[in-house]
Image (cartoon, rainbow, N blue to C red; front, side, top):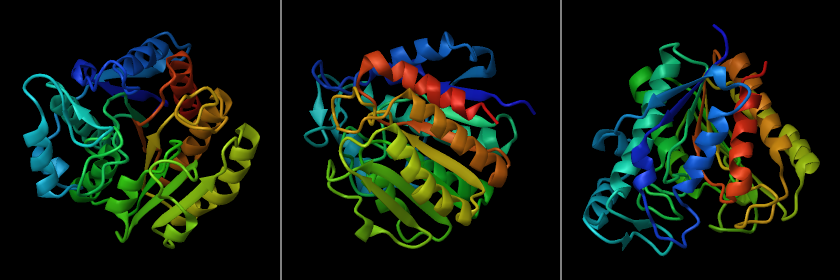
Length: 311
């Protein structure tokens, strides 16, 4: 089967509105979709409407009281805050459920052999949402839900999650910690929000954090990734590869201090494609996390997708 990417998206994701000054804006999705639709590899992309996720899917990774807290906080008008950074508008709950639905439907499409790569162009992001609470712009943790869905619905025994967002995915680590057959690997600026992600939190075969100093640039990052992440990932021999694809480690992103460029995002796409092809029968799913400079976000995502289409 030729390599292709299914882009899961729904316009409901544009209706999440945390406020005019909030960096996590709907324009993020608009610039990404524009970049993908105009990309030279556009013929290899298939755009699919994301379904609504369900309460049952959310509860794969989150506690019932967290689900209830989101339902009770979601406003019919105006805005309401789950925490200082995570603000809901009337469209936010539906947007978040589209993200959950995209991730689970994407796993199904991969397992059914419909595609080689799913990319979920959804918002709000998810990797800071812990089992018990939403935080850090994130309502539900789509990538952790996808991992649990793959196990429950498809019997996948070994699922790996690679997170290259500039912020540590404390929520994904919290949900997957102690789970046999689940491996979480994260590269992130440290110390930085949310304060987690030190090597002291690592657990063999389950949690592998690779903290990075501010001003780490492309060559340094790729060297560290090849030395610290790829061997751990390959020794795990995952049957499904999931990626928290955050693009806020870009040198021009306003929320952090790493110095990556599109060169590294294309390189990461190639690396993840090679791992997926070798161990996962080609199955690769990525979910949009951060990335807040609208001038470089579209090109960064396009570079990641282009890399993932290369053998």
